[in-house]
Image (cartoon, rainbow, N blue to C red; front, side, top):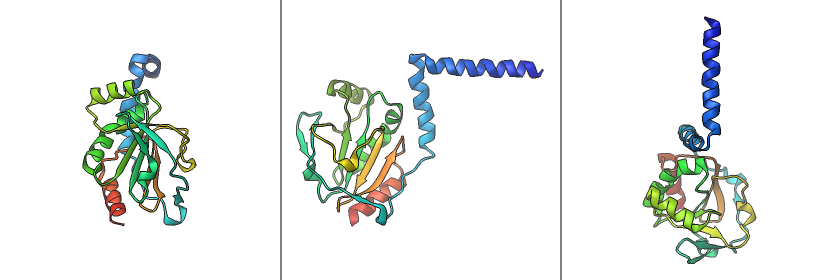
Length: 188
């Protein structure tokens, strides 16, 4: 009896490993896993004493519309920066919530969705998923306070230029918590 259960457990384990190795099934499994994990994560504001202030706004970005955005234009505004890629499972998971947040706050908050993917790939991804936010690529060095080695990585900067949210990994950005945090930042 115990041997049969052990064999069954081993077979299930091997099937799961095989599914993760096969390229066609790996990404959907990773997306599903990150989707579940994102429901257990939430943002929190960085304590006032631990907030880092941006020293440098000399950053240029090329938008997928081919326009150039000067980050200096974001001074004095609430800024939401998301580093992501079209091939990244946790990024894919959080994109629908980011789109919903963008839909409701894009006239009040500066949103910068930054990728190193080429715009042709990005536009196919956006069309396939019915996303309409503008995407950008860095044209020069990213301010040191925003440098990252992992994606997705999201920063929210208040009107004073301080980083108030710094989160890695997939999150539900369309939550009441995030919305109330943005509302507080907008009212400052």
